[in-house]
Image (cartoon, rainbow, N blue to C red; front, side):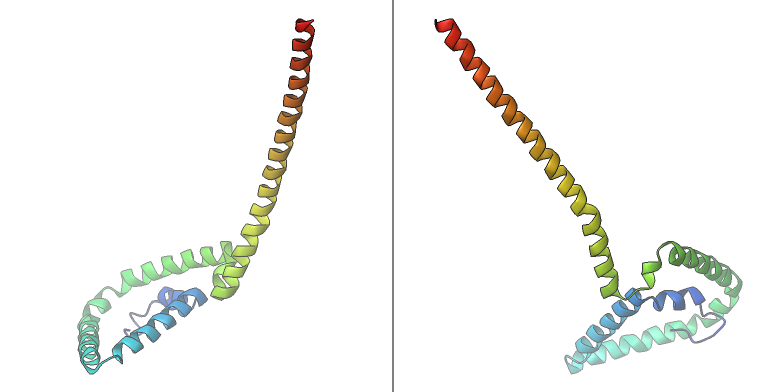
Length: 149
């Protein structure tokens, strides 16, 4: 991460603090640490890569300083967009497990009544067809009986 406060983006910090993002990043760090510790060779390769990324970030500091104005404008726009999302979708601030349970409940409370209504309509339709078929069968048999006489 770039530690220069001039290039720090509030929007990135806010997104990183969302529970679903925070949880995912934490899980990724844990996996990365396990992979890194899996063997000395992997550790060496990843440590070298980390060093190169740090060098690249430090080399980019002068460019980031020159782009500070546009970066702040983009950051402000992203923060405004995030405010909108947080207002319209407040569950985005919930922990992943709670978000899952709420979503599951919302779906089941919406879908189950629709399925029950559709099943009831299908049963009613089947009953009408059966009644029609029974009545048609009786009248048809009655007609054949009368023709035979």
